[in-house]
Image (tube, rainbow, N blue to C red; front, side, top):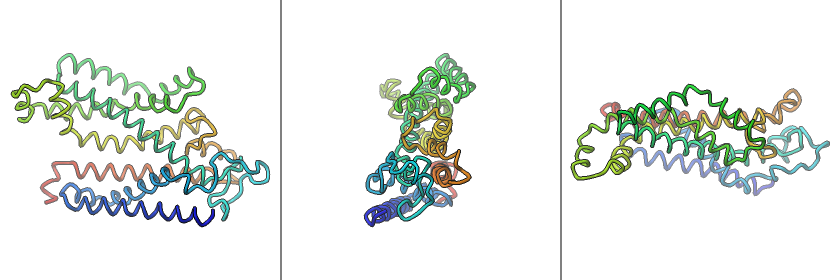
Length: 310
């Protein structure tokens, strides 16, 4: 890596520190924010997530090589970490650091987009079921029960079997459409409580229709379980995508997904462990960061903790 790449990496670290500092300063101004900061993993989680997001956004500046470039398929394969290749090379002589950086785009992108689909669908279904109740609630919740009982990996394997080369957009949608069932249950439980509150009765008395009551008054007040579910869900989706890619069923090669990077290095673990260890560590660190953020958000958004935080 030349001096410019090291400078860009230092810039990514500085940007992550600035983001973590800005979040901390803003959080100190509210009781919920102070509860968030009291969780020991919340601030380190924000820093780690900000660092990897910055790496993903600035991948062309940070990565020293093209992630698919194979300069010497024989003489440069499985080279250990060095000045030219900070994390070594893989079995195809590709630079592991460059693939790790570009892989952050795919792994984080799939996790965020699939969870956005899942949270949107789950929040809508849960809100409708909890607000209208009766046969609407019964029908939607029985469908959710079926979705929870059906193994998600089985559905994904069926899609892969029917579609030989699954496009990335289709993979995101399939993961999203099979990940919303738990969120819908959480939102439904929250909406069942909120629909009896005074502000909902006042909105109805002023002539607001069901759609306006649900999406303008009820759902914004049910944001806490939605936010926590989304933070936890991104990590779960990343693990699912990594598992599919490891099995050769996820992101198609040669795209640098972290799961496919682990798969590429499995046969050479004895002689070149860095090809699988570093992407595995990246997945573990990011998922732990997301779990820490989710735990901090759960503490911050729990109204039962309001009195203790004052």
